[in-house]
Length: 203
Image (cartoon, rainbow, N blue to C red; front, side):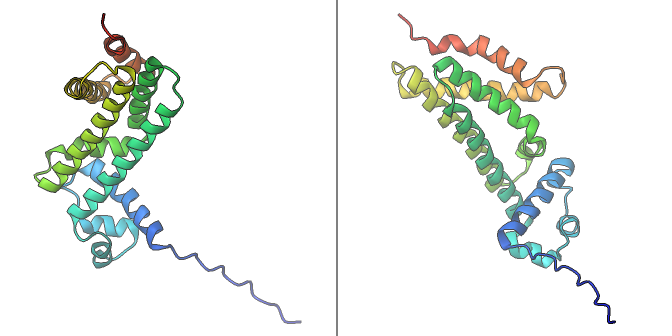
């Protein structure tokens, strides 16, 4: 009787989109841990299991790869903020849930947050523009939320208030790195005590 050998299952070939996400996952971790200047494309290529020329074919350059990582962070952050805003039924709840989503994003996406924090010193106009674009995205999103709660505010006031909130969130997130006992909920509580009064129109 002839014994048939079991066939070895073929490994599913990744689509280009899947491969790009794999590269971004690896690159984000390396950039966050090592910093842009210290990271080499050779290292990323080796960790992904691609040749360096193939890595360049996907993203063009190390800066192009970093920009793609930042653009993904930008999408993920606005998605988290939008989901948080959708479930609120009052201005106070809206601000609370969006603040909480920001701090939880930093905890749940530690590599993304480290990347945003560390790459602000990269001497590249494109990178700095992308980082500022993330801040402006969150500012405009926050200004839109304030506009719904405070229709009495003009555009200048909305932008000023939103800039203050975003700046406070960023500084508190950095502060929390040295105060691990401060949970996202506690950080949100601190900022609500500071900003919640601004949701009530004056006389």
